[in-house]
Amino acid sequence: MIIGGVIAVCVLLLVLAFVFPRLSRHPQRGAQRTMGVGAQVGGKAPGPIGRLLSKSFGKSSQAMGKSASAGRKGRGKLPL
Image (cartoon, rainbow, N blue to C red; front, top):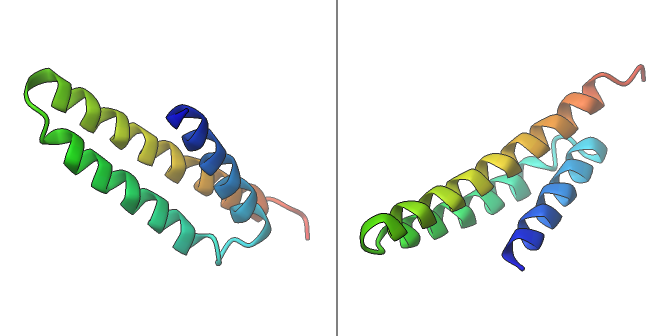
């Protein structure tokens, strides 16, 4: 269920960045900040579980950044 949520946010950021490149930065930062808080909380778990949780939230944040960046890059390549 969390994976589906992350995918949905990535798609939403991609579309938002393609349609409104400048206005997409604030939602992107908010989503990445949320994932950062999750990584911090997950990192407090003991042992390898903490590293695994922290890493998964970090990768999710990275995916959100890449999808928004791809949307802005795609918009920049339009001939308009």
